[in-house]
Length: 329
Image (cartoon, rainbow, N blue to C red; front, side, top):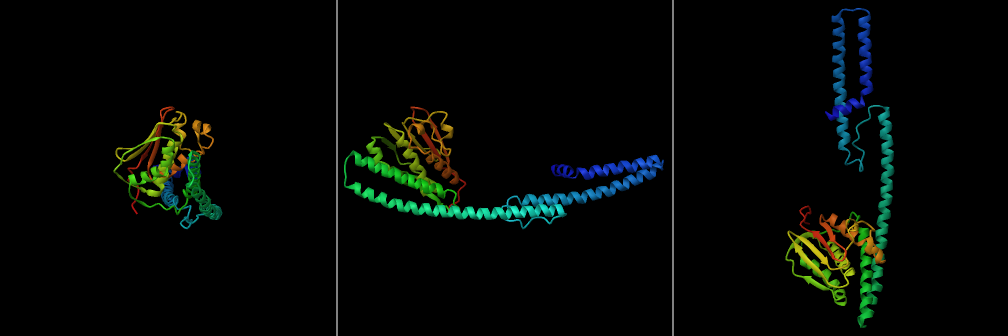
């Protein structure tokens, strides 16, 4: 019915003209006082021919709509299946469409090339910048004292920012190297804990963590990045107290801290790109990119991520890892 209504809307001028001609036809028969049987016969004959024409025209209209709707998902890749034009106007529209399609394809090719060049440059830059970082870490290994520990943590923070740059660029890459398998969640969490062990010790933050004992379907490298970011944030905004890593049924990883918390008006927006909120304004080093990357990665991995917090009461971030939408490689 909706298709027929759409057809009537597209052909209303022709139908209106047919109605006018019918009225003229009937008016002439009436003025000349022709027999009613002749009027009815002529009217029925014209109506019958008109209905046949209407049927074939509607069938052609419906078929064209079907073809065009079927092309909605592939029109960005090809125009080979466009229906043949029925008149000069349709031919002009298709010519315009082909011109726009070709311009779009060239623009996409340029953007893809530019994006690949950017990723290649920053990948090379990341590997180059890691060399002086590693050299500085080696120089600090033989040094002792609180200042040395702080310098090592600052180097670790630089490494984290470098990895964030590369992660940000690779998120939209078509060749993103996801390896979806079942992984031991404890193995991933322990890698992140070891990375920030020195900060736990120096800041005297108590870690409450017991083996989780579950396996999750995910990508180890990308999930590890998310867990590291969440631990980094927990340590960053916790001056004293503890960080707790626990599991909630069925497979929800919770990272809770006793830090300064997040303002209620900021909680719904902390995963937005570049949003830092009140805490970010207090801490000038906050970029508002870390949690945004976590959200994007979790979306790609079909994991849920959410936060619950209140000022002065700490923050709890939940990673829902019970995903059934991933395919094992």
